[in-house]
Image (tube, rainbow, N blue to C red):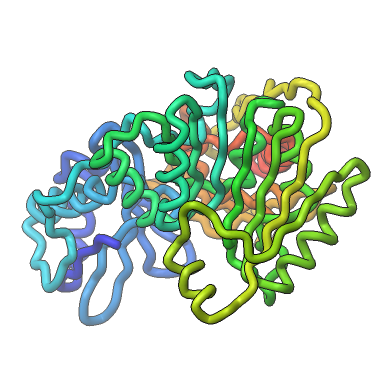
Length: 390
């Protein structure tokens, strides 16, 4: 990902970044080490850049939690800062390519776009972890009257599919660069016909990270319309049996199984596995009834909370465990003398949120976006407020 490496910044130059740069809004200093974060407002978005320091050089890079999908925004921001401060750049990877098509922002959707969503198509399908996008693009081309929502946590894959949408002029795909387990909770009940989960990472050593889980299947059945299906394809025998056990725990489960079934479109990985004569397992979970409407009347607001110098001392260093949720204050940064930036993980154990909280004398808010509107996230939010209200 984009970064620049410079000669070590002097204290004078470090102090000059905020007042000198036109896009840097604040500097946040870590309490524990020589780690700095810079708040950026650029291209209509907010995000953070991280400064990692060493004896021989400094590196200014993106921050994983607030990283925008459009990589060029990060590159342009780094370029702007280096020019405005006349930094001595030793190495960078922020070169722009004019030959690449721009990202199609029309088809890129953020998590907040799904609050009270009304789909422009009567039929909707979802693909979780679309990878290269070959199956997603094929399905959309074959079914132009159906909306396909492609969810991919791997940013480069999301970028590549957005480019293909632009090049192939496909009108019925939305791309979401987010955790599918969280996005499902945002969708209306009975709104989708199909959910594809093709060749997810098996996570044999970390099974809690698997996409297929009791909570995922429960949300899938809520989102699916009657007779809609969740389709899993995997080359992993362990994952296949794990999924079967998970699905058969559902009281009203209707499950069908196929083995080595050929699809009209095959990914390069599936083609490789077939050449290796590996078995491909396909499992269908059929939804047999409609679900009640889901209410999302949740607001992540920090009422009457503002900066107090006692906050950073009150925050627990270990994770707090609640009934089905957790809160972990991972790192605290100071901004000038009367503001804090707090890095926090919270929510569900198997699908946690990672956010920053910005708190000063006037306000307290999630930076740069609020959590997904789930009950478990709201429970964690209320616990967070208890520690910030001192």
